[in-house]
Image 1 (cartoon, rainbow, N blue to C red):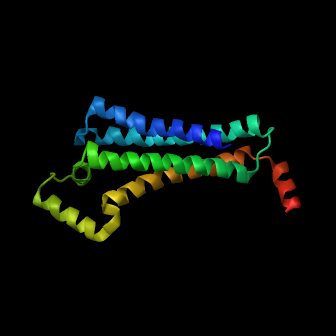
Image 2 (image 1 turned 90 degrees about the vertical axis):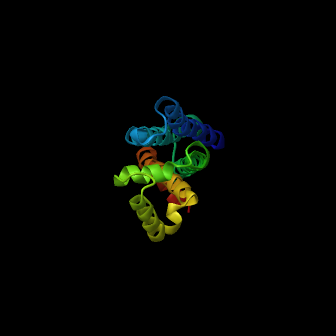
Length: 177
């Protein structure tokens, strides 16, 4: 089980980090790329987290004799989601600290329709920092990216575990408890 979790998390993390990272080389990091960057980013997160279904199914069929309890599915999927979230959170940290240190200001300017560096933009950023505090820091953004990936993965985990579980295993476990 552990080997399957690590392998799936590594593949998912490589997709979630690799594809957006490669898109930087083709598209750059300017505001004109933000919309397509969001599509690429969220699409790769969903595709990478969809691997959870296949990991759970593979565990059920190849390692567990065709049996799977809801709890086993949840353990596998939650671990993959957490590792994937950690990888994407660290990528976000690297991105905003090293690759594009002005990203937050550029993105806020893009999303608010204001010019980066303008007094209006500076005022709005100050208001947002006051209103959102921690969530407007690099650390807060990193936690947000971790939670985004984790929650998407967790939802896929719950659905996959419900679909793939064997009712007989659930009934047997409840009788033994």
